[in-house]
Length: 123
Image 1 (tube, helix red, strand yellow):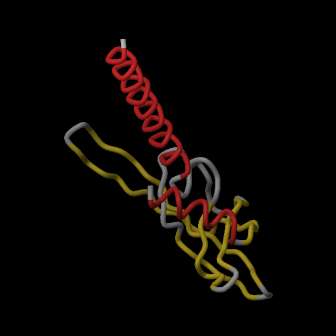
Image 2 (tube, helix red, strand yellow):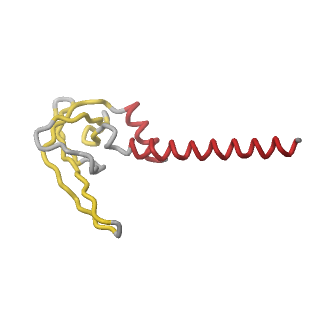
Image 3 (tube, one colour):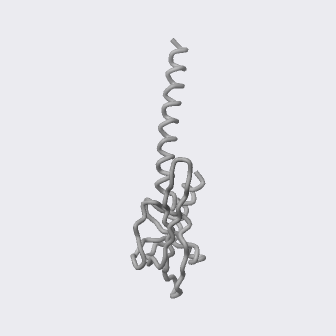
């Protein structure tokens, strides 16, 4: 949930811009279920006439961007070096939406179950 609140805060208070991918690194993770490949992007953007570069803190296995591609970002106006790549596969937005939705479904099932139990006890 912390990721969802942080993403919401950034969307409301950070400035949108466009950055250019200047580098990337592919990280292979080996686990008992197999391997996965996540791509982390290094992005350059300008704010207040200054060029800034950052490595995106979130990697994704859905990213296909390469050097020279333009990409949407959000940056902190108080510290333009603090920035993230935006979009459904960056910043934990998809992850938060998926698990938030599943949590909501289970919550509704629980509430409906409690309502039925309460209703049957009154009969």
